[in-house]
Image 1 (cartoon, rainbow, N blue to C red):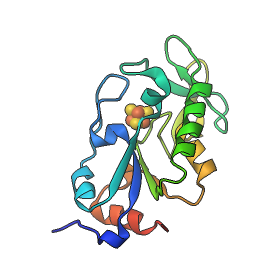
Image 2: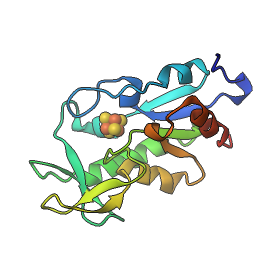
Image 3: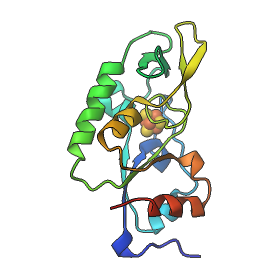
Length: 172
Ligand code: SF4
């Protein structure tokens, strides 16, 4: 079976860098996506991003979580309690501005991440109790900047037919 998509329909997809196998997670690991190989073979152009690493927090880094108001959560380190919200949001705005003309036609993101998660990312209170659900800070900025672009988690694109439907949902 071939996964190649006609060149005229090639897409530029921004994707969480850990999903393409780059060791950018807080512990220096990655989360290589099983459907990465056929996606590349399809001719899609990938634009990897890692908000937490690229905003200057580096690898390894302290694990983080969302806290506060689920509609406007903060990004806090678990132990040191450093607030990285402004740094992450500033990097997100800069990245989105830099790629405004890059003809990005969609985003594939890592689930459950306080930066990249799209659906049901846990938001906590200061004691660690879950108080609600939201979306990662980078994804929130993407939605605000490019409300027409499809954004999905790799875990929801669980087979190739769903990936094709995702690609077909894009308008450019
Ligand atoms: S989920 Fe996002 S912030 Fe976390 S390692 Fe992957 S790309 Fe980086």
